[in-house]
Amino acid sequence: MTKANEAKAELARRTLARRKLIAFSEYLLSWYGAAPHHKMIAEKLEQVERYIATKGKEGIGRLVIQVHPRSGKTEIVSKIFPSWLLGRQPDSRVILTSYGADLATENSRSVRNYLQSERYQNVFGARSSVDDSVSLSDDSRSASSWSLADPHRGGVVAAGVGGGITGKGAHLLILDDPFKNREEAESEDHRARVISWWNSSAYTRLEDGAAIVIIHTRWHPDDVIGHLLQKMASDDPLADQYDVLFLPAIALEEDEYAPNEEEFQKNLLEGLYLPTMEMGDALGRKAGEALWPEKYSREALDKIAANIEDYEFSSLYQQLPRLLSGGFFDQKSFKIIDHAPEGLVWMGYLDIALGESERAD
Image (cartoon, rainbow, N blue to C red; front, side, top):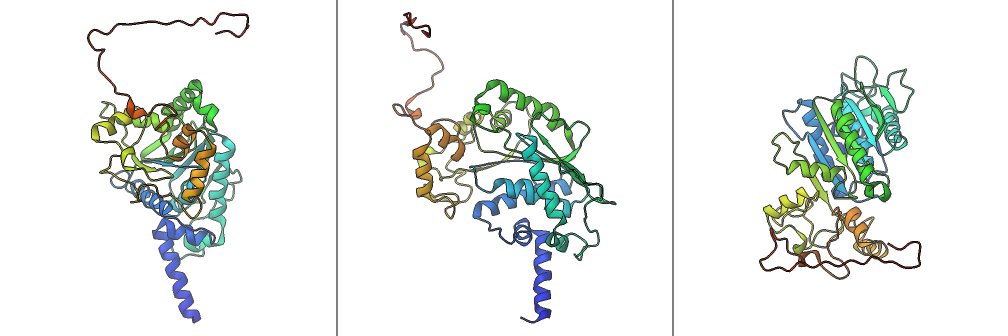
């Protein structure tokens, strides 16, 4: 290839990177290889950028992404996407949040480092052909809070759940993994604190026409995503309606889908997003196919399932934080009734467990 053709090809790559998030990802990071689910996530995030650019007139303003651990979700959502957004919308303020300040700051530092890289400058900076180039402010030394250089007003703030972000505004608010582990997720008090912080501190930081992206593996029916699903299905006409990208590690079997729209809505009220057969798999997979077979084959996922509890696999990998089946009874064996049948005789049994043991119930 001649130098002229090489230059033309390089210019085409830079132009495409400014337009498309996956092209930007692969140009910015030479090692990045996008799987189908990354491409779908990127398409959704492009619609989020559109929402911010049009101040809420077009695109997606509320996005939930449910996907299993180690699936590349943080790289594309919390690191690459904010970098791309700031190149396209350099007056946007971004707030990155996670379960701890250290993780949120690490994501913010990655975004800042990307902005300073030569490849980023080829696309959006001084080395690019854009009229309005982007660069880091000289006084932005803190990884947890930094700004773009004048004349732009954009920048990033990082905070852990419970951390103070009062006085900060956001055109993009990202919540990435608000729970550190099972212990936190199973604690009713901790879940209440996380949701209270989300309602009182995080949500109130939104600027006019701002967008929200929430991404975390499911832990509990009443985790943050569960809480928002319940509000979506409530009778409140003003409740935010989220675009939900449901990506189980293994594509559901036919009998695992919600049988109809009524059951779909009932599941939302229980904090579960379980699509109907008509909705189908987001990626068009056949039943039983793995989400990212190049990294986690079906055999590898089956091995994971065999070595952890059913509840953990159903929650963290299938994004369904409740048992689809148990050791003795399948959930579908139970029928929900509105009232007790006539003639029912009520019985009571009490085991007071008295004995010599000091630990008797």
